[in-house]
Image (tube, rainbow, N blue to C red; front, top):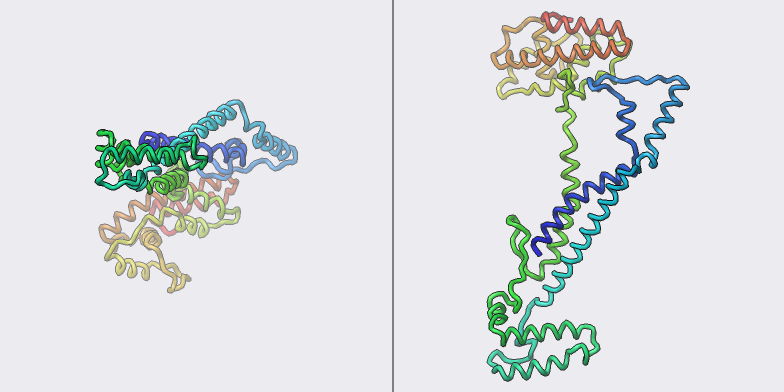
Length: 366
């Protein structure tokens, strides 16, 4: 039965994620095709604006309806994959039924005691055992006893007789408690063995763990960290999405600077142990006019203002190293703002973002 458990586990790992994928395709057909045909943003994170004229909108809606139709989804390839998946499900159910039969058969030998079954004493002679077997076999023989449980009891009586008379069966009974040999099942190296009475619950837990655990694990692995997803220009995707949402035709230099200082890249600039006092001192010195004293500056903001005011000599070696690392990110983000402004047709905003980039490169207040 151990190979059956292994095969059952492999099949579950295969058919459950596959079934979820096909179910998703049926519930939301053509979703990936629509994203490819009408992307919301470019690979660089820039927002895509589709033509909104009546003719183009109608054409786009007709194409979307075509891509999301179930007739388009249910192609020959999709039907073949579904057919193969159905065959795997049938195979899985068949194996589960076989395992259930094995466990049901093993349950016959729970608390197996040949002396109790034959109603003889442990000191009974072989002739007494034969007489008892003859008596009990007549009592429980299926041809003579219409009780549905009689056949099962007849089998147990026969096994009890073998355990007391047959040398091999007797040895198996003395070693394993079963005339047929060991009935314990091992699920693998990481799991302990379990006896017959616990086989059912363990099988259910085993199946439940795979049915729930595998899809959740696959889903977790597929969910990437959005802050760790970089675009080809080296900028985090979440940063460019924020720029696309908040940059408008009326954005000025301060708005561009605010977007730069709110970028996800700044979160990576962590405060080391022992730097708090120095950062507090620098924060008080470089705090912009008009900013409330109660408003705390992040480490990245302090380094930005120190750089644009050319106070590098006040930085420790570690802070100077952090500043160099952040300058590379700030230059990339500011150029990303320039590119997005140009793509959106915000010429004046692009010039403001270029001014911000110049301030970063030349260490000047923008």
